[in-house]
Image 1 (cartoon, rainbow, N blue to C red):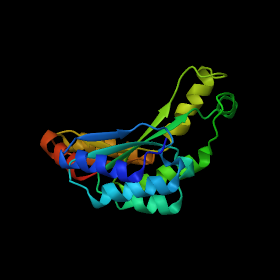
Image 2 (image 1 turned 30 degrees about the vertical axis):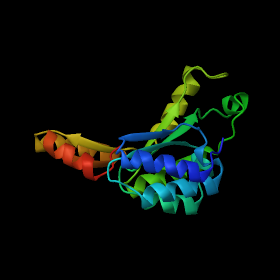
Image 3 (image 1 turned 45 degrees about the vertical axis):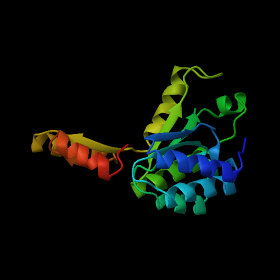
Image 4 (image 1 turned 135 degrees about the horizontal axis):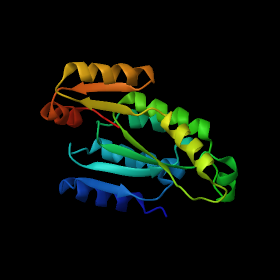
Length: 193
């Protein structure tokens, strides 16, 4: 499960030298061994080529303040996090043999969101044991309340302002662009959910 760090760093250096657009770490609990995760995150931060994006599947509820502080130092777009919430139904969580502190997941995702540098992808799975339409709907509502950052693109300022007004009322942070070129510039320089 844990490749030797020297090997991982050599492989990462190769990807960075080749300017590979994206490298995915697919272990769903990449951060289960803090020292390993920290070493890899520090390496990619210190060797950032300005192009390569690193995708990590993590357990957000076990991130601690030191790990979050390091993630906050990353260039926007360098790292993206996939967080497998799966469900907010405690009976289902138990039935699928998972442990998760959903309140901590919400706290961590909000802290990371406020840094504006890391894309977060929160997963839900429909059809899990003991899940039904009502409980899945509840899970969706729980994850939706974690408030993504939204880019509104429209050439009419009145439309942008109207959408921004209503989205802000619901607690969403909104960034505006008047056209596609402006939107692409924003995407290159800022993090948008």
